[in-house]
Image (cartoon, rainbow, N blue to C red; front, side, top):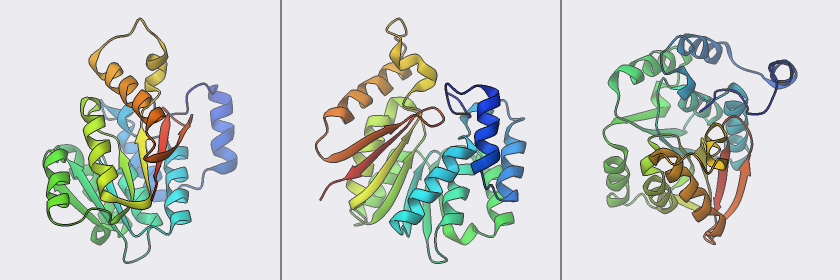
Length: 221
């Protein structure tokens, strides 16, 4: 996984950010703190966060879903892009990581926009479906354990409205998906979902080579 767009030289990556990135100070501070975390590569690239915020604003999204929070950068960038009455339903299992997230959400003044569920994500997603929230989300972002990507995708497809967007992170997996010699469980899970999505007529599809690869799946009516 990568927190910088794959294939770009360091010089070109810095140039890209210098002419396009408009990162609020609170996001910069969170990214810098997370850079010292032993699992820092789990954080999304700032250019990806800005792109996701633009998508959310273009859609006029008000209700979004996040599967996998880590230290909270992606939830924060989406929350900042939502209107005052917008809501992020966020799923994670790690209280230590999300404690960092909560601190920055509070600092940014968006705590009221983020509903964090500390439980296995499939349980939370099934509860949302059971409570009648199918077809009510505008946007979903999947960035959690790769073995469950297909399960998260299927639940998200039920939860987002027709015309809603599902964004799936790490679909290029640092290039490992294109190397047939690599056959570990996580890589194969991403490969399988990529192949499934390519044939899935329920969505309109585009795989964007930003950061570690971001698939966009627009739910058809």
